[in-house]
Image (cartoon, rainbow, N blue to C red):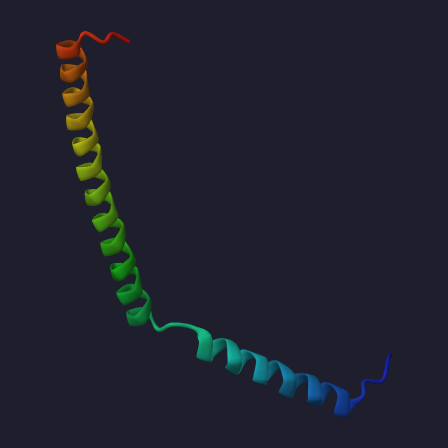
Length: 76
């Protein structure tokens, strides 16, 4: 059986505890996570609405251009 160095094992245990504490301090609580996700989803919804308005505006421009082409006699 291999003899383990007690100091080495104790230091490893301390190192692992410190690493775990650092990880825990970086983690969000459940409420913080949900609040952050709500903000992200709101931003995505706002961007989707903006994109929809841009699509409709582009459609109107394309229709206006087609009408103007017809009036001036241009064809595709």
